[in-house]
Amino acid sequence: MRKKIVFLLFISFITACSQKHAVNNEMNRIEPIVVAYVTSWTNDPVDPTYITHFNYAFGHVNETFNGVRIDNEDRFRMVIGLREEKPGLKVLLSIGGWTSGGFSEMAADEVNRKAFAVDCQRVIMQYGLDGIDLNWEYPTHDRSGITASPDDTDNYSLLVRDIRKEIGYDKLLTMASDYTGDYFDFKTLEPLFDYVCIMNYDTGEPPYHNAGLYHSEHTQDLSVDESINEHIRLGLPPHKLVLGIPFGGKGLRGVRFSNAHLQEGYTQEWDDVAKAAYLADADGNFVHTYEEPRAIALKCEYLRNKGMLGMMYWSYSGDDTGTLRKAVFDGVMGRN
Image 1: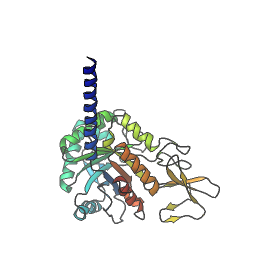
Image 2: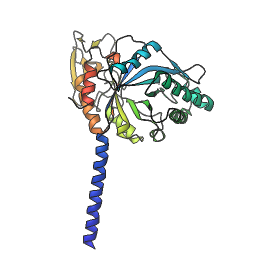
Image 3: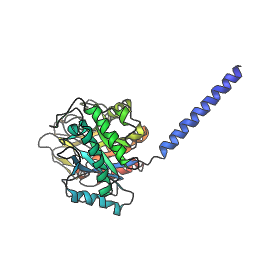
Image 4: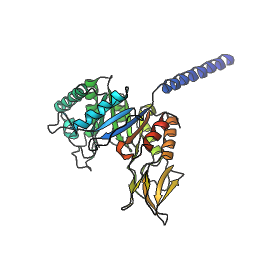
């Protein structure tokens, strides 16, 4: 009997290992992605070399709460046209953004909500898009000056359900989440979204990091690691998560910094706990938080080890030399 039990335990162990190996193999087949937001209000040329997905920012809920309005359609068409230069490039319309309202009113009304979903499909077909990215900032949240309701979170789930029904599963449906994940019912949403881009930034201003990887004395709210783990706890699998980083820095008044120029009187410093860079003044004070290649490489190593899908950044125009874009691509693809 004991030999039989040992044999059964051995078989169970082998089966479990085989299943884990199969899952790991499946994960390894998932093609990593690099998502760049391109804004409607900039006119700079766009190079798709180091990008797999463009999110065009922004579309909006229209004034009658039943359709989509798009900013600067000429630039939108230019971004879509980049697929001729790079076949396989994906282009999505991102609907929303900070101060972009109308979501609460639209999603609360079944007729308007379903009409909006139908119009999302119309936009995809008209422009030949690869999908829709939802960027409602945020359900139940009115600090940006938009209308909000306690029912927004549930209505958001209904909206996503309706859009998915209209566009089908051969088109991408994605979303942007704030770093806390507080405003969404992810257990309901997870089967409906292809992936979720987490805005792992805006977590602090000097003397705090904007997007430190780990928690340190210079972390005001959540670190990137804490934010990612919270989204997993809320019901999202790592392979549907995209780690978002900021290309723009945050500094005290009068402090300016770019990848091409270091303002006189300041030094570049490194927080080895948070794995994040910052500028210090002559007295050693933390005066500017920013992203740079070493920090990006470590975040990319983190997301690969975590089994995440890729990285997103806001926004394309925040990289004045192309250094950050290349660092993201090389890191996500495991080339560094």
